[in-house]
Length: 79
Image (cartoon, rainbow, N blue to C red; front, side):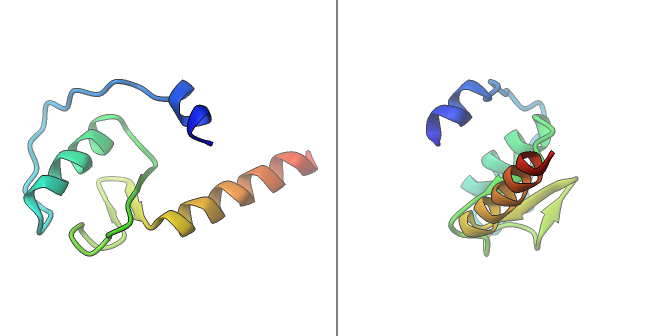
């Protein structure tokens, strides 16, 4: 699975600086997600991030993201 993401990744150098996470180091991840127009920010620990989403980026746990990927795969398989 990591190979899939590696080939679909973009290098992001955010030009924004956020201070919305309770753990300041997590702001860097959110800055990259926002600057890169990410649909999701996937984390094991959602409690340091704003609830559910920020600036169009859904903040989800790993299991929820994998469930979303599975739904997409099933939908594409039916087509």
